[in-house]
Image (cartoon, rainbow, N blue to C red; front, side, top):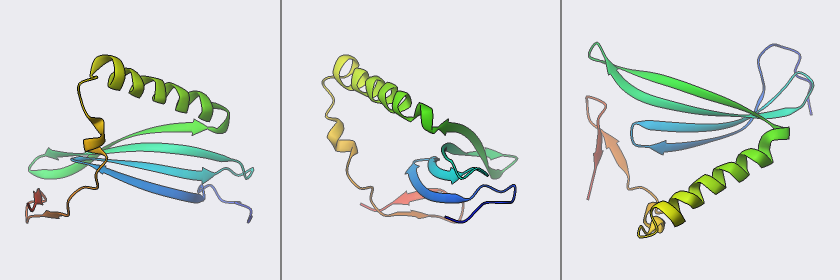
Length: 112
């Protein structure tokens, strides 16, 4: 692996998840000491002064917390699915989204 001598963090892996007006980015980056961490960024599209702007929130997750984070997230999701909303078939949300096109105003259009 190459050394990372600058201030910029090398991006090793990136995954984007679109969810309506929100997009989530999962990025693995390296430190100067060639260690790794994960950033989770929520980017939310909003309208301000008749223009679209993106509000971003970021979480930095370090390797020593990966297991605890994944366990807590899984526990929270399972609680919602099994205890709070057992009547919902969550597999319906696992399907790939339909192709989405934007109009001239940046609004998403879905074709049936």
